[in-house]
Length: 225
Image 1 (tube, one colour):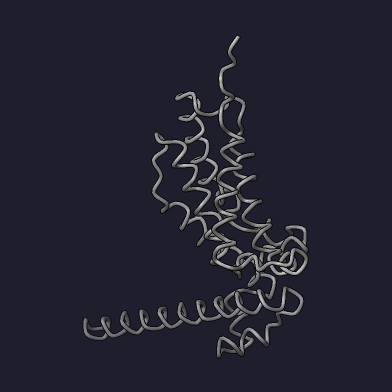
Image 2 (image 1 turned 90 degrees about the vertical axis):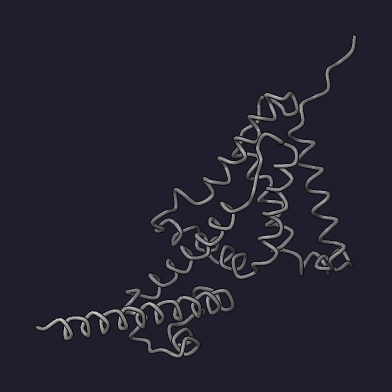
């Protein structure tokens, strides 16, 4: 084969690989939307291939099964959250402000990514069966916990935070306040008689969560005899 033919073959291979990658990504985007709207059971391969403007057989070719596709969707949403979290600019040497930044990020990310919340709800209904198959499941959230651990360490050294704190506990406290408010905002709005999705209500909740978490982590003031 001459050099011109080789170059043509390489270009052709590159084009095919790019087209295959584009097809995989279209299927994954469509699956994320379909599973978020209809759940795992209702998110049929037919609905996904229709939205992706693809074919059922391509889903099986690239992902093996509907379950394999759902696992890939979960991998994608966790990876994007992890990447966003790793880009948050934190200065752990200023622990109070750093912790506020972590809280604001978590609340904002959950609020701005409703599909993430819905898919978490779906997977919890399945008792974590699919998320347990993620390739990097041990890495997700570890960055956040490490960051919080460093913030707490600096806070203790500066006499600002309690010494008996566990970074995992603080992480769960922050995540729970973000998750519960966002995932239950519609029903809570009805029962409480106020629109929890209103901008002022969201800002109020953020302020309340920051104050609450700081109250938990702050060192007790020295007692005076």
